[in-house]
Length: 406
Image (cartoon, rainbow, N blue to C red):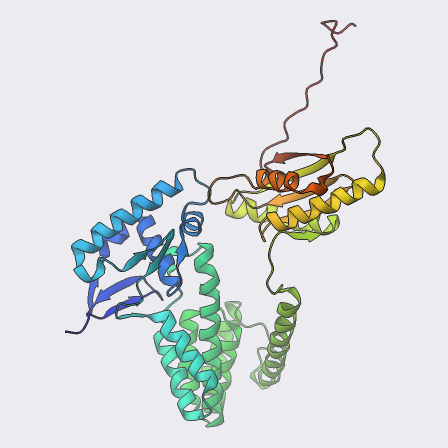
């Protein structure tokens, strides 16, 4: 007996069906259960660690571990009541969770990815066009609209929407070569439903209408698009084609620039904290603080200093210990943390929250520093500050004589 077919829709809505019958509708009553299942589905085929899940769904909440276990328990009860085949749809390993890929399961976004890979490798133009049509038909809306705003959704959401748009324009080029302008109009209308402010889609439709001799419709669409702020070129149709060609050239140049920029900014095998000059550190902090104000994640500003064992140590001795501390900071902290030299005896750090197990990264730094024989008897001290709170005021000490004299 064959397995029941599980179909999962993540585009335009979130739905799971079993042989065409909607199941697990009760997830809609629990935001966290729904987010948990969605997260694991987006990682389809890859185990997600316990810490990864708690960070993604609960941030730095102190009770995140217990909350995850409770949510997982509730989901298993719900799935078992729904259908026995769903009871083990989430597999639990040693500190990991993963959607069970042994089930007969189709997820729409991964079907689209597979079709896009096939289209990119397909030499036959007609077969490639058929794959383009299949991708467009399967793109029924943006990824998980009810979970928009979640960082782990947004990254894939943008990528998938760009893939849809690129596929749309690639198929239009096929139709224009064959002078099938009615299909270009149909495609651009379809695209405008998903992206109603895309200027290029309006231009494609206007030029296709003109090519078909439907001048009045083209002029009417030009007027409406201009009035709604979606068309910013010369509204006279005779100049629109030239503007459009320049737009295409600009987009191709931007793609080349993006590839070049990505090669420049990507660090292959990047591990450990990011070490930079203090000027760069200040710029990174400003951006991160703006993001912190918008997205409400934890940031910690830390100053780390070494204290010599003698009153006047030699400059070379201190410099050597600072090199040891620099190495410890870069190797011990995470790749999302930033390190900069502030003075001859001090570093400044920007940390993106505590570790998933609740431990302090600075205590790990301290332990690693003292483990190195090269620390040469120097002491390590640090001060941690949360940028959203004002610094703690420094209190002056009274003299031993009691009240200050006037």
